[in-house]
Amino acid sequence: MNGAGEETAAPVSEAPRRRRGRPAWRDRVEHALFAAFASGLGALAPRRAARAGGRLARLYIALSASRRRILYGNLQAAFPDLSREEIEALGRRSVASFGESMVEFLDSTRLSQADIESRVELTGVEHLRAAHDRGKGVFFLSGHFGNWEFGAIRTGLLGDPIASVVRPLDNPRLERELARRRTRFGNTLIRKKNAAREILRRLRENGLVAILIDQNVLPAEAVFVPFFGRLAATSPALALLQRKTDAAVVPSFAFPLGDGRYRVEFQEPILASEFESAGDRDAMIRAATARYMAVTEQVIRREPAAWLWIHNRWRTRPEGEK
Image (tube, rainbow, N blue to C red):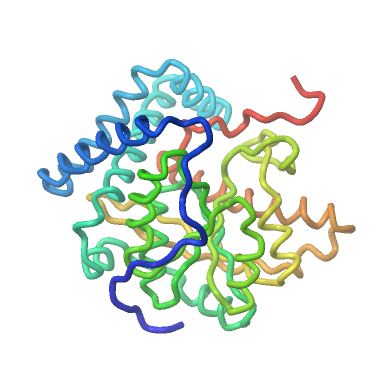
């Protein structure tokens, strides 16, 4: 892998577009509110800004009965042995962690490359190098855990930029704000819709591609695999692409260490050959996807407050299940 380069404005695979039916005035108002919020963050010291983000996230949950039901319902189902008090404490930590990490990312424009390198340490880099040395490209298996945005930025500073597969926001003005932060140091973005061709091109060049598959998907797009004791609708895209390309899948998660610091942990590569004995194509895809989610669950169990429990991960249910 190459040495890290200078800060640069990296391209995305296509320009963001306004979602059909959204009025332009709404985009402008939302962007103005975002700009005011970002300006307010800039007036605070970084740690004070992050803590403010945690408090705002907890206020949002306090005001949103639907998100509160999702949060505590998910935690109770995942950790049935915990008391109500323990569940509530875990929920508060999870929400605050999410708020803090998002503010840290939004506030990252005032961080230099040296700042990010000092705040985010790396372990298991030998696993990433071994996967990259195969010459077939590398997929990062990650999730909405810790500060996943910082994790991608820090990993890209090793020298080879990461192409992250993303779903653009409905507001193109806000999407440009996020893209600017994600690509400051050379990383690039691939729009989720029709992404396969660009992903395959990156892998042919032995590139690095990050995909997050820890959120719910529609029934037509899903393979159902176990996740915290329940079947979860999960995208088979990563398994399909690994089967097609033989690229290694390297689990990579950004663990919070406190005080705005993180540790990105690279685990041993998962290879497509591990699933050849599963049977036919569909069985291989299911086995691979189940393995990815099992790895993700193991990571979350180590630091449960770092995962995004307010997402309705189990919203889509298998056919026939009530």
